[in-house]
Amino acid sequence: MNNLTRHDRWAHTPIPHSLQNPPAFRVFEIVNIIIGASFILLCTLNSLRNQRLTYGFLFLLNSLLCYWMETIGDWGQHLVYSPRFWRHSMLDWLPYKSPNDPAFVPFAYAVYWTAHSIMLMQLAPILQRYWRQLTILQCVLIISLPLNYAFDISVEGLCTYLGYWTYDPGFGPVIHWPGGGRQPLTWPILLMSGWPNLVAYWGGKPPLKNLNIIERWFKLDTWTEPNPAYVAAVRDETDSEDYSETSPLLSGAGVNDIKKATAWWGKWSTRDAHDAKLEYKVKDTVPRWRYELARFGAWFIVFQVSFFVTLVVPLVLRRIASGHDSEYVP
Image 1 (cartoon, rainbow, N blue to C red):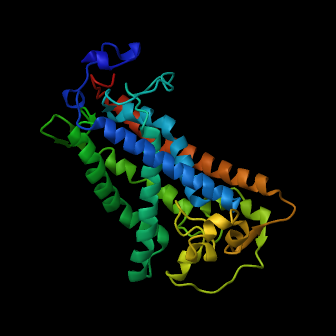
Image 2: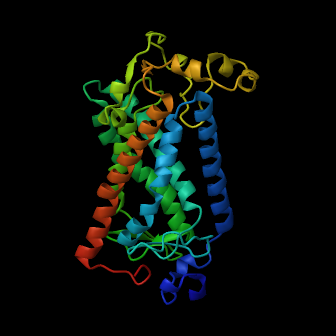
Image 3: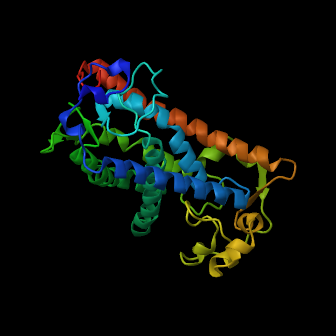
């Protein structure tokens, strides 16, 4: 089955038996591509309507843009995908990488990290309501490990069981599935409890009415001023659904747009309705496009640097330092 590996670089690299003929692999990748592309399109349209980069757009796109480092980390953790998937060769220039790069992974990347962030930032305030002495950051740290384990074992465990990918031999204790797939129980799951939860906390919990931690790090608050149109009334959870970014993936409609099904189509731009729900506004002396470009740049830098430092570097260094190699991921 070595002919399944397309590139000459891995022409003589064996393929794990569990990956040679996984069930419904074509359906799996097509569904991932459709879902990922649909969410990205919806968030792009939503940003155009608001004339502002929304939480969903920023998180989805910056998660996707971290994808190029995925294969480096895969090399470090002995992860290899089934060669049955549609693949690309855009990352073959990397010195350290896993043999196969499925085309669906960038789309799955965007949805996976965004969904994880949304779940975490919805659960953290619930925990804080019961233990008011805890900060949101402390709640995030408490929830992160069990949430990450549940999410990883259920989603990734199923995929390694079916043979879509595997960790072979992997590090630490692993589950040996009957079909030959292997699912680690400690590494990299423990490591993965860091980065996604940090960026979720830095990005904030939608609906965002003010600048988040990332944007304040880059001093974007100096480009803003208090918004006189903001209504400083305390809203309950039901009222918060009126806000245009309540759903970070599909949001964007104003109050009347949500209540009237036809209003969304009757009014394309929701910039005024969106901006009225924010505690700040961009100063008149700052072009809106420049401010939004700066926001995107801030998110991009934080995502790229934090992903590389907290995930890629530890994965690669552990493999190199341990000398624990893999015949399937040379």
